Image 1 (cartoon, rainbow, N blue to C red):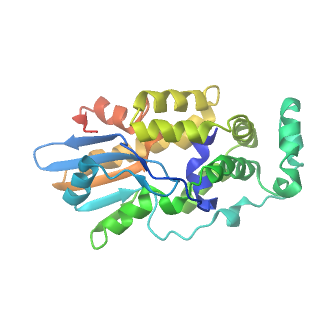
Image 2: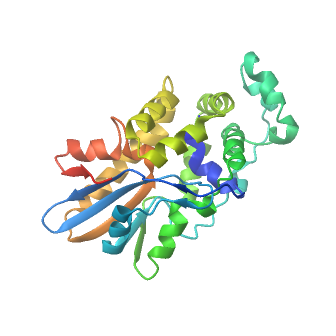
Amino acid sequence: MIRLLGLVAALLLASCGPRATDARPAMWRVSDADTEIWLLGTIHALPPRVAWETPAVARAIAGADTLVTEIPAGDTATFERVAQGSGLPPLVERVAPAQRAAAAGYGARLDGLKTWAAAVTIAAGPMQAAGASAEHGLEGALAARFAGRRRVALETQAGQLALFDTLPEAAQRVLLARAIDDPAGYAQTLAAWRAGDVRTLAADFERAFAGAPVLQQVLVTRRNARWSAWIARRMAAPGRVLVAVGAGHLVGRQSVVAMLRAWGLKVERVQ
């Protein structure tokens, strides 16, 4: 379930150096007579030298007076602070028998982690192999572009980690099982994001949450509802805003885009 864990796994990554690639991430615009809000789907950890600032994205960056991201710049909450567990069985005992050999391959180094944190660490592996890091993600670059302009955060990093940390153990074990089973997930998500392929992104997201309603509610649906409500309220005031959040939150039947449209707001795809 790497598509679920990319946000937190991005906190762990160090970069390598593959060649430059181009990307056309999906972007939408919500507008009325005096307000314009762009919705840019991000990927939190990227390989270096991915060229994603297309003319459409550049216009949104130049035109916006406010940048909205998931967490504030410089949020200091750390993964390590909340990842350590106590009294938990070894990792191999937290997975189904068919996965025990794979879990054993990580050795004892993950035994002291909470189950969700072990899942995040496993999910970071394919990203590291691709040379991806949060340093090269869109959020850092956007923060630099918006220096001197207003910044707003929808959540805190501590709050995001708490979503994982308060999951029932059974749900955390679903995360762990799917992280082990999905080593190609990051590469597939990256390819779809680069192409702006919202159908593939939505289908991947639906598969990731299939049979896991608790995870879907806690990690996606409720957050999308909160973010959509914020955007709807912001539409009542004039201005131009760029909202940059994980691309998975902007695609599919329960996405921010779908919720805004259901409320009667005009949302158009602009890239």
